[in-house]
Image 1 (cartoon, rainbow, N blue to C red):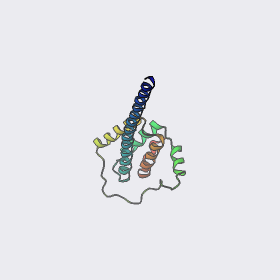
Image 2: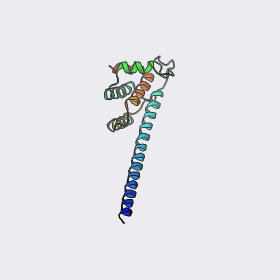
Image 3: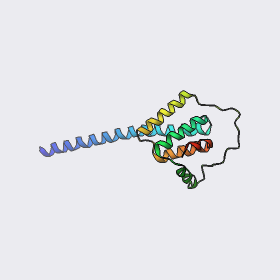
Image 4: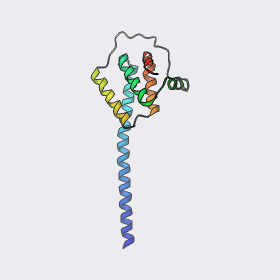
Length: 146
């Protein structure tokens, strides 16, 4: 009888362990999805020049201050990118009309960024990649980095 009770307890413990692992997996999956959507939207908005210069500078400032990204880190990341994805030359195209992001939607993005930083979902390398992407589209934002 005691062997049967031990087997039941082991089964219940294994069942609880699997359930908690599944819960953690799906919670982390949702958080990773939110991080991916945030990164994709920042990269897309930077590429389409939806940010104003001050908004781009504020994003770069927040990311670089929180993660300790310095000018030397950026230069090293640009130098060692194997495909040469980040170009430092300015774009030759001049846009006749810019679609600036409203302050409300920018504040929502900053709020999402703060949540991602507080929950430690956004890591250093991902933040550096976002900073490089913003700087490749807004070269004037380099002045906020020390």
